Length: 300
Image 1 (cartoon, helix red, strand yellow):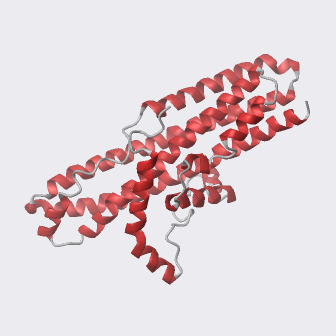
Image 2: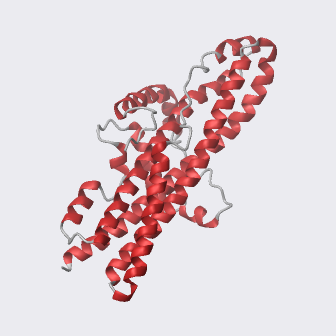
Image 3: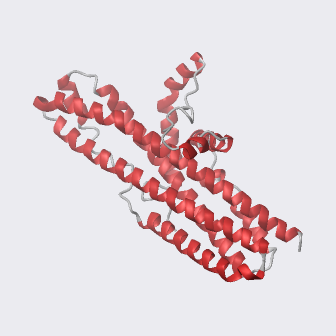
């Protein structure tokens, strides 16, 4: 499966991040000298309307994911960021699964590990889309403070910037959601068939995987809506920027863009939090299932 949404290759991502670090150099120096971290607090823009979500994004595991995903932006490592975030790693899971009898349950659990890994890739790609969007639009906020004639000239530079967000549903995104739903259906069917046999260990594994598939699909549907909204906002901004080249309407465009960019920052923050929440849940479920698999292996 292609995990890149057509945004950029992993090597291109590394080059892009190096450029971001050069651009951030002066800002980071000021931040360090004032004792302020250049990375935003993971709980600074929390939406309090959902109690369960509010609790989740204040958890220690969520905070760990938040800082880890932002630190990889500054990493010079040649390894994939998805593998840096994913726990347990693919090699450990593959090794554990090959050391126990290959039953239908294990086949379904293996599928869940695969689909959760795909979800991890999708979230990481969208994380880079957020960084790309901020790199494009943060300078625009400064331009909006310039006199009208200069604004009209400056707007032309932003029209050629590609929309950093995919136009969903993309094939990759849709495929993962479909497979998660199909897996949950298979797990539920298998659990109903096996209840009378009292195979508690396998039932527990299937219950955990079914719950994980259900939650991840819902998370991806929420993320999909947020990405669609961001894509539409960027397209709207591009339209306003084209109008802004006409000096006589430049100030009207400035007012509209100021309003749009304020909301745009909120949208980026919402998506960022949901991505971290999804990555956190991926790891939590994988760890639980991995421990169950290891227990079965050690008690054979």
